[in-house]
Amino acid sequence: MLTTSVAEAAQVLQSGHVLAYPTEAVWGLGCDPYNELAFLEILRLKQRPIEKGVILLAGQISQVEHLLVDLDPNIRKQVLDSWTERSTLDRATTWLLPADQNIPEWIKGQHTQVAVRVTNHPLCIALCNAFNGFIVSTSANPAGSEPARSLQQASQYFGSELTYLNGDLGLSHAPSRIIDAVTGSIMRE
Image (cartoon, rainbow, N blue to C red):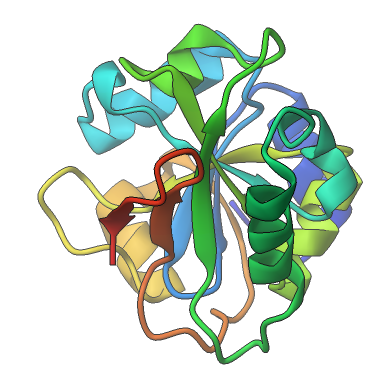
């Protein structure tokens, strides 16, 4: 199914289904992070092992504020600046943050941290806000294949199994960089 309605897309997520949607650089697959069956469906579609974990995508800082509370103030400022001080042309940054008790084990995979990004992509912001929280965000491709960069490519990968939120990719040319907030290590450049 194809939709241009953010409210309808949020309803797809709330009803426990997987949604394909455009992000800053590539198409993503998303679901309600608290719905384990929906999450397992993403892993099935992608043929991805659960141990890898996934990114949580938020539309605003308040949706992930609870994960920032225990950070060193200097690191917290760096994280917040990376999410608020960039233009739509800049590459997005995902941070590995200490997970709290609110993050399901299946989201983290084999890790103790959780990968989190606050987006500046207008459609993703609207989707997270309509869903009323962060969502799972993993690239729309089977494991080992290139991430989808168009609705056509995403639908070639997954066919009619999904609902697709039609819209434009952001202006970033590469998926988000991933930085460990505790160690400062760059996990994906």
